[in-house]
Amino acid sequence: MKPSSIGSCLCQQVSFEITGEFEQFYLCHCQHCQKDTGSAHAANLFSTTAKLKWVKGKENVKTFILPETRHVKCFCSCCGSPLPNFLSAENLLVVPAGCLDTELTVQPYAHIFISSRATWDEGLENIPMMAGPPG
Image (cartoon, rainbow, N blue to C red; front, side):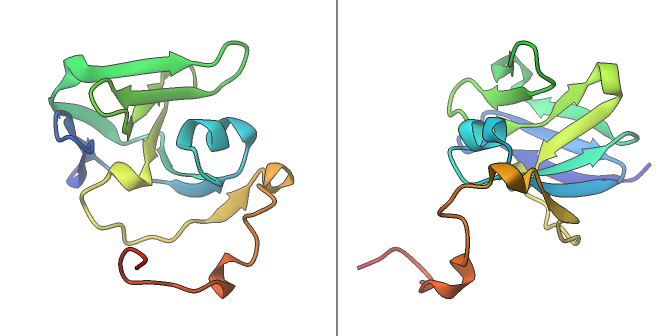
């Protein structure tokens, strides 16, 4: 397997390498993903074959498991950035797309759990876009 992706957290205390390919890429609108991202959806890549290697800061990686669900979130204990996690019961690597430093060459396959979609998350392509901060 060739190295396909590298990534890190916001404070750069944690870095990792993913060897292999992502099989799926979804934008998840479930309420759990809204809560753990603080946004309208999570953008997650999935693989049953790729391997995760922590390059730096593994001791700063914390895991939260939402009881009685399949929802797991790994994050940096210093800055709170979401990080990859491996669901061993499902043999599934889940990688938040925003933590990758390597450019993604694939588009999301689908929006999922849209029945939970935030009411303000519609028609966003029609609001003004700015190259930087307002002002």
